[in-house]
Image 1 (cartoon, one colour):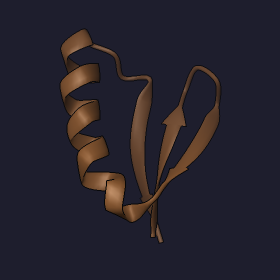
Image 2 (cartoon, helix red, strand yellow; image 1 turned 180 degrees about the horizontal axis):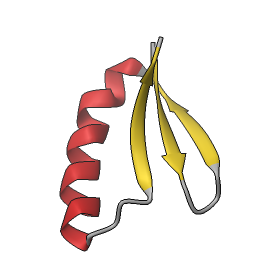
Image 3 (cartoon, helix red, strand yellow; image 1 turned 135 degrees about the horizontal axis):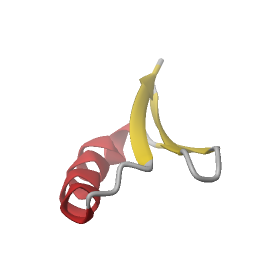
Length: 46
């Protein structure tokens, strides 16, 4: 399974390898939530 990052501004999806998912989610939580940005959402897909 891949995790897709959806950028609502650009309407683009970027696939991320499963091995990077945990790090990525942590990074998104720390960086984006601190800035109050919710433009990028992780979406799990099989």
